[in-house]
Image (cartoon, rainbow, N blue to C red; front, side):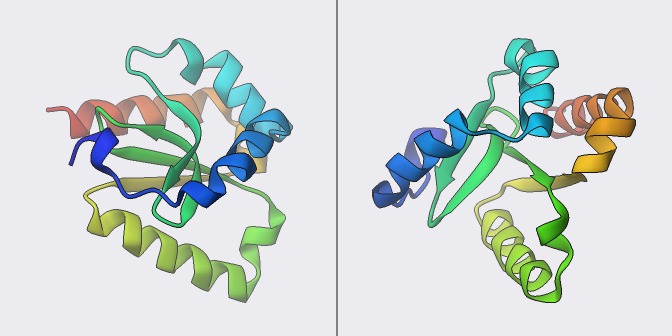
Length: 122
């Protein structure tokens, strides 16, 4: 499924724009220090269905999520599982990193992203 054919809840457009303007420090670090100039194009705060994902690469069908502490509560863990299952049903792989991984292991995070993209594009 090509990017332009992915389902999108257009009512989320203003929220998506707001999230781009108010990105977390970890999202900004990953964007400005790695993804913005990566070999394949990424979109920030991309709407897919009824969800807004942090980063999306159409070429590799890959979503990258940067999780703050709120994602580690039981309700949010269940919501994230549901979200991941939905994205997987569209053929999209989801990889998640915690804020502290961006802060403490940035180059390892970049390496994992690069490896997953290369694997998916084989």
